[in-house]
Length: 270
Image 1 (cartoon, rainbow, N blue to C red):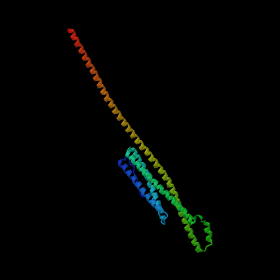
Image 2: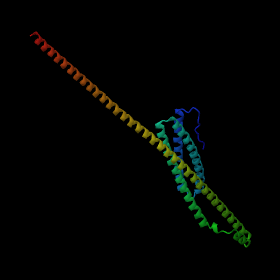
Image 3: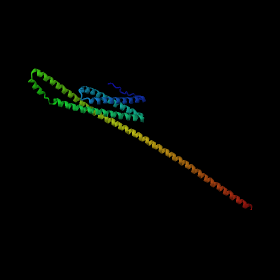
Image 4: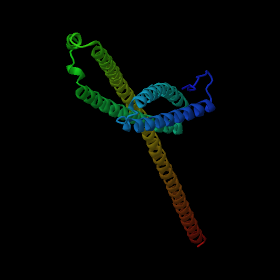
């Protein structure tokens, strides 16, 4: 299946960031649908149609793994653009996309682990019931020499069927080892996304802390302004009172002087 990867350009605009965010959301939804389909197929592995189901599961698994890697790369590009933008809303959007992607990876990993367990049990059961593990090729050769030509042909055909069944089981075991490798890769990716989310969480916490600190500083500044205003207002009142007192004293002194002069003038006339 062909996917359209995001093409990074030197002049990324808001439209580029929006397009990349939409692409990430679409890819995560696509992966989720693939995993849901895988889960349905895994439940049918014990049916007579198991061979076809294994083939479809293999294709779907490869398709999903490829899309996971592409999404991881696009997510890193999106994170770089968001950090450059410094937009808090974008940072929260990034955190949400990472959380969804991490959840999708975990679900895919669980489906792989279920597939691995069921296939191991199936292979062990087939080997036990068919007796393929106990077949000695030399026994077939010795027994073949004692048989008539018609029986020899039947035995040869049985040997061919046994070898084909052994080859099929070995092929399935190789596929199991690949699933084990894929699960390890998913664990690494899961851990990386977890670290990215944790880092993003710290970044948001720091932003919130800075905002809270700024709010506290603003509130403190407002209180200081109010306090200064009150102090200034009180200072003006005090100054006015002092001036009034001085004027009052001055007027009283003038009045006293005038009275004294008036009394002195009266005595002089006598």
